Length: 502
Image 1: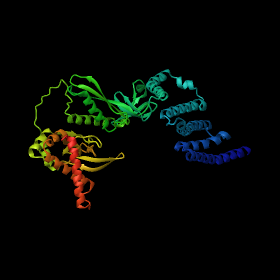
Image 2: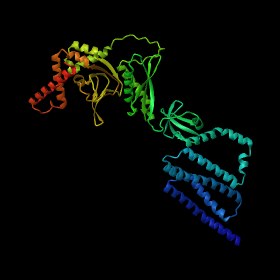
Image 3: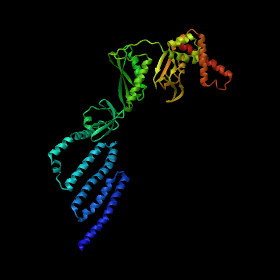
Image 4: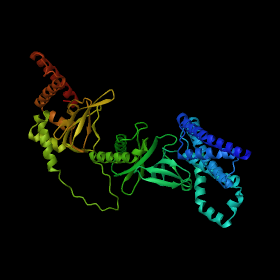
């Protein structure tokens, strides 16, 4: 009777303890999640159930069939599930909070994975040796053949793990760094326990084993700073003055997207090749993701600039090149002639003068995004747009505002051509453009012995200035307009005489 009563009391305690322990464990999990953001899932709920059922049985020692087997299974489940719960706490409180607060960087995923692996292995050893009472040495080293096979199979894995540890200790790179590996530029995405994952400029993912990357020469392009230099080589013909080539290449690099303003690009005469003189431009880049676009922009700018300066980028000497002289494109001449007749001050020229002007004008090509004219720069020429589109920008306090768009037949730069005044706006090619450039010497020849043309030109420039200032469109008295016309005409005649040395 007393034994039955004791058994009844034990069962009653177990029945009451199990829900209390379960509810307490669940409440603890919810508090950890809300207070510290510890992520606990279904395995934690399973741990709460097993723990709540096991602890009363372990303390009270209640007897039931196959008790020892059931209790060993419950102890093993508690050890393994408890290890997983412990890893969740370590991940949140140590790796995500303490490590990031003290090291000022995200914890390496690789280290947390290795520590988790070691913890699980220790938990398994505890289950084997402590719960079931088996010899650890016997389990691990019981079969020489099995150990040999496993050791051989894990040779590369262990090598990658050891190399990963070396990478974490030495820290030659970190996620977000750009590396040059085997000639490829790639960004580090992740360093894990087995490999390093990278992404190239073409969005191709590379997965390189840690053992391989440790044995390879790596160039870290973003250490100690993200600013680094890139070099690009181009060959030009031997007859071109080196200083001219250097100026062209430096300007082409400076105007390309992605190239830093400071330090400015620098050009070197690198070598004397078989068919050309090799020049190298050194420029500075900060965003390695723009690497391909920046190189394309520089090469494109160099090509257009070389065409405008009539400089040849020669073919290799081993290539047989046969060229025949071609006459100027008649459609370009016809378009230029039509453009001349649209330009007010060029309408003052007779047909013979127009023919001579076109014979001495230069046909230039500008690439999309290139600056045809820079505001504030000196200039002694004007441009007539044959094909393409270009924007006219006015810069004030570092802010540029588009004020007009030039299309086929439009012109720009005439005020600098006729008076020598600095460029009043910036003109940027929106598309590839073909332009005729008329320089000061061509116009000077027409004005030297033609006083009537000079006077007409002075009056025309005065009228243009009055239109720009809004005088003609205002309600100003006619007498005042005539006075301003005379004043501006006299001023422009003086500028024309001085600039063209008339």
